[in-house]
Length: 261
View 1 (cartoon, rainbow, N blue to C red):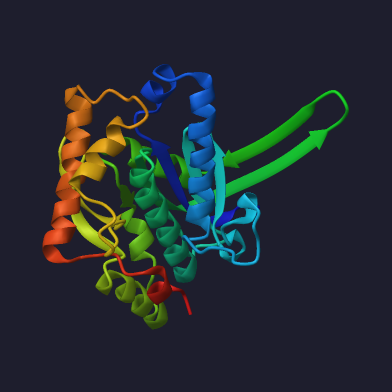
View 2 (view 1 turned 90 degrees about the vertical axis):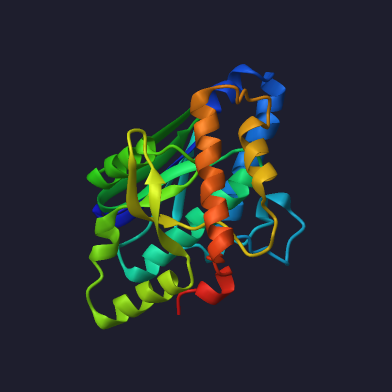
């Protein structure tokens, strides 16, 4: 991919170490099949491909304008450029991933930044071995990672510079549209040392498929131990966000409403 300004999201599975330590290898394989399923679901924003019975092609990932690289417990998303349309695209994909992560017991935490980013992927094979080369480089990736690591919940911060760069009338109109429809909202984000107000990705949908129990069980599912102050804190902060959205009816509007025209 060309080295240019892009939106980059870095997402991490919370509780990954315990997930690996507390389960047998066969169980981990099944669980990470679900993780790959999550990635496909996120890229397709939940849209099913009606023309196939193949599980590998179940979701219509061909509609995506966001690239995804999955490494161990991390997901890296990036766009082709830093246009307002691709900002909305990466927000939509991140929102879908956060939502299904809770449902599948693989809660995610992330950050979205904007800046120079280069991604190169090559694969070489012969009869004896497979050699895969992946290069991801750029300030945007470092900043997205730093945003992710500061937080004490399952959620995703948006770097302020992502918002501030949109200056013309058409860009501002689209940005205001997704704010008015609660796709992104301003929120006091729980950080490791304090709270700070950021725009965040809103992953709560108006379909009542998630509640407080779902959130608590997401952190304990797959034999993860939640009997620590650190985990209890993350659960509480995630539930606080959920209740804030429910109380104010700030549901994230459906993908269909927010498709970029």
